[in-house]
Length: 94
Image (cartoon, rainbow, N blue to C red; front, top):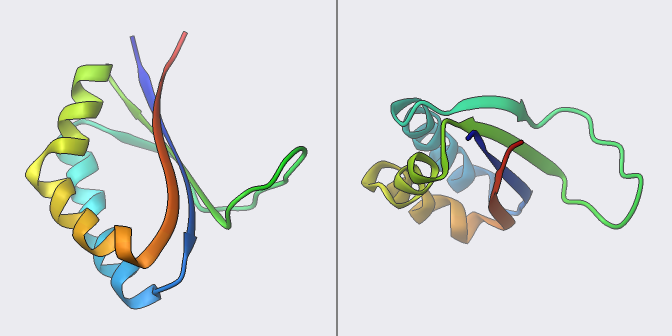
């Protein structure tokens, strides 16, 4: 069953977040992830939102978790976590 990463992000350190992005993209590709939304226009219909929103599809939950916990993405996070406020979750598809 496909799994979707939903990330909601407010960047406050552009320089370090660029380092994160340069490492995160190849990590996503290595684990077979596909970007479905990456930035772009957002229309907030209810609640509050962050400035940047990303959706990535992985083939299943095990692969999504392997990606997140893998050394490639953990290295990316060493730049990304201090550079932004984020919510990051996995949701099973239907």
